[in-house]
Length: 470
Ligand code: BGC
Image (tube, rainbow, N blue to C red):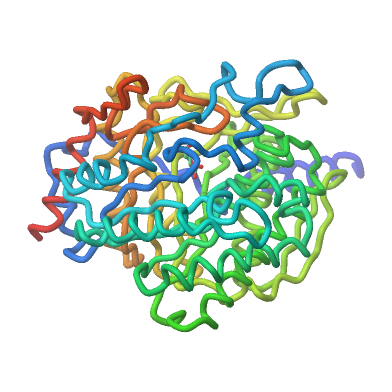
């Protein structure tokens, strides 16, 4: 009898957990057969002042960057003897955006854009500790001036995955004392460009940067150390908070908007009834999203994954440090447990879902979910990146229509979304994937540097034009 009762209680508990876990952020699926792709009236919800842009990052587009940690990484091989970047590819001359930025700004204008998000390359501006390259500083003045002269609003990212080799060799974000260097760079950049640039992003995707660099080892420094990943995350949060406060303390600091760019990728249980799928999805979400959102709200970072990570740390400077939050949204993963110590879970593709060229599906509902979730920070949101890798260009048009429709639904429900930046203007160097991923609105011919507008991109300009009619 006792055994039966215990069993009944256990089954009951299991049922409650299985019911409760996936409910925290229930996977949403809309019936797209009822969506009329020709009806663009949703675009009116964006309003006339909405910022429409494209986003880029210095190392991915500029070309000629040889003094940052990625340029060294691209020449190296991993412990398995294979090149760090797919097929041993390198950023090299990239899109020659350093020279061709005026041409690229004209392409943005042609699409009807009103803003451009780019990053400054710290390794160019401060090639050696405390030594400033005035020509590089002047270059970014010219870029910003050209953006403004074209009637576009510049948005500047201070750290988008790259930094000088000398800083990497000091330990970069692994050491809290190194943040002083990043702050010195931030101060110089703000004193230079503060009067011309209203939108400032401190760091791009702290959790992607930390997890790729210190957990999966796919980005430099290529470590696989979960506890150190958490330490780096804490230092990134501190860095953001201190950069925010530093800018605010400088002349003009209160005339600009400063925010952090947070990527949200959902982790959904592949089998909703499966306790381990749900549990692992929950842990991944805690590591990549929840721990950071909590820290931004409370000033306290707490992350515990049995046998892997145990860290509690004060990050008081990060609390209340957002004039806006940048959301980078691409897709979600379906998490499936595997009975294997080497690979305890996989991201399971689903046959019914359209896949992008990256290993994740088209999932427009996810941007709506992410917006509703981020709304708890009670600060305006700008979608600082969203776009599809689609070499065949047979999914881009649908992606843009549906993701933007999903954004409009969040706006209709009261979420304050102020802008949207497509990733990216033209095909560029996609980090560990090299040149294989074609995210560009414009296809890039690497040999001739010709940029050609893809058919699937044209809808972006149409939706923008429609939004202005409203
Ligand atoms: C990064 C970009 C990257 C894009 C597409 C984001 O994680 O900020 O630099 O190219 O995703 O994968």
